[in-house]
View: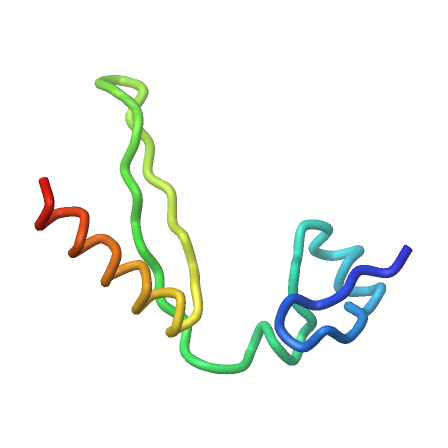
Length: 74
């Protein structure tokens, strides 16, 4: 079963799926546009960890707007 790109609705190339089984976008969509990253810190005490979430510019702007809204409502 072929996987469809979330960005352009075209099939994702088999080689890309083999290299990155969890990918949701084709090569063209993965390299288009600016990318931003947000660092998330979670856990507790000695089990603390950091994770990085990479998103496109539009997703980042939505994330920041939602985050600001949540922080002003607290």
